Length: 208
Image (cartoon, rainbow, N blue to C red; front, side):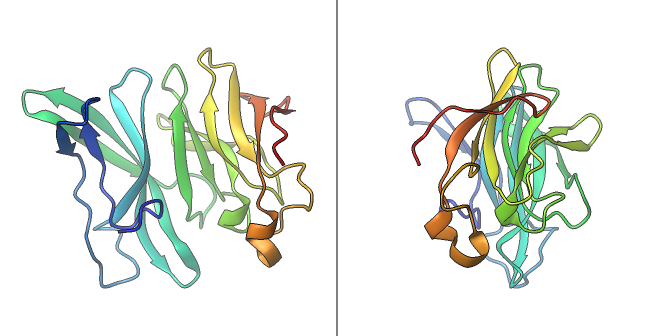
């Protein structure tokens, strides 16, 4: 298990005092093939819906030499806390966006729970150039908000009033983000703000 990569990681529910734990998923602890969509092997970034009734996360379904960070899909399930204790029900999965999209991250629900902020390489050439998108579970559509070609945007969350989205971006950095030649040497980010339609970008931090 390597925390942060998603491989062989499960989701758990834990009480705020840390005393009671309940395992929510039971992914594979080891695999023998590079592709294992029927027995996924890990999870990343679980997020509750605003009303607390659902959880969304990214689910690892494989990896190979061309996808060393893994092949992923989105997973969504009801969160139930009853006499049996916390557990998931009615799980569904999705791979929205353009054909061949392999990397997904789910970051948060809108205040009305109709949309989920997602980062993926849908429409881009590589996961290193992810965009911020909105996934609408009711329709299965993935709407690209940032639409940049040589930048990376992710970790997008709604403001409490649902009017804006804060996110991380490599935009405006010097030297320019260049993952193909020097990822760690050029991977610098700051916090940006935009409207929920992807317009009105505003840089909030100048750390780099």
